[in-house]
Amino acid sequence: MSKPPGKPKTGEIEVLYASAEIAHRVAELATEIAREMGPEILIVAILKGGFVFAADLVRALHLAGVRPQIDFMMLASYGKSKESSGEVRVLRDVTDDVAGREILVIDDILDSGRTLAFAKQSLLDRGAGSVRLCILLDKRDRRAAAVDAEFVGFACPDRFVVGYGLDFANYHRELPYIGALPEDEAQDDAKGET
Ligand code: IMP
Ligand code: MG
Figure (cartoon, helix red, strand yellow):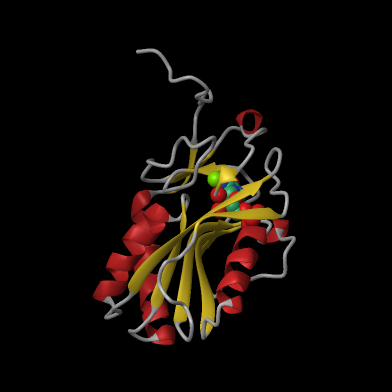
């Protein structure tokens, strides 16, 4: 079968977090979130990258006794290579009323932090009661914006990672594990949708 146009070549993807390890951590995070936030929360999942993590986490939250309402924001941050530019655009905004709500934003990864700093401020500007961030991966060393997540799955090495919602050129999101691309293949992902 021929490759779809533009599909990046894929050498060995080095598995960093296997799916069983992710599932275990997701259940732990749900317990922490339930304890600290209580049952009545509004979840805002960030598209595209947060969709797999959010789908697993909301079901774990159910088992932990949380009754979330769920909404989505689709954000794009443009920049060359692996660096986001700081310009974040809203491609799809929340439709629920956020005023006075206790909000949990769920996303795949905190890198420079610009995307989630923007999302958080945008919800606070509209009167959210509180906004907490839950991310699966934290590339703490690369932070440029003053933002931190209250709930973090794993500290992530400074490698370009894919799978479990994370993409390279919108590929690899379907992988059930998280892996690192070979260094020579991870050079040029102009970001677009997060
Ligand atoms: P930030 O605004 O620099 O924090 O960028 C966050 C977004 O960049 C994430 O939501 C991802 O879409 C993307 N991103 C950052 N690092 C990686 C990575 O290693 N693999 C895939 N996407 C990444
Ligand atoms: Mg992306």
